[in-house]
Length: 75
Image (cartoon, rainbow, N blue to C red):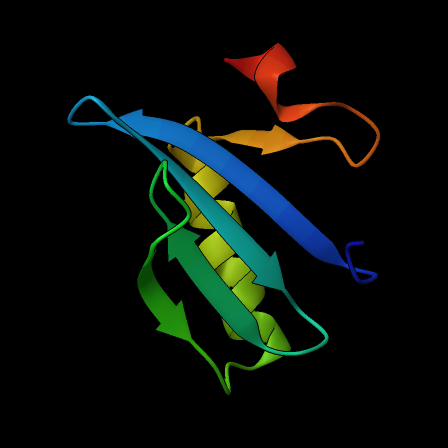
């Protein structure tokens, strides 16, 4: 189950499906590949830093997954 204020983002890059999970409350950002291997994990971020990252993701037309939908509906 996802924590409150957790957002999931997905995109395709170099023929790979990538997923980012961000949380402003915990100050974390984790990026996974299509096999759920962690590619990048940042902890100790401020709320503002996480928010800036989320704004950058949305400006790059990365899809944010709605909390109530299955991920495969976006692909």
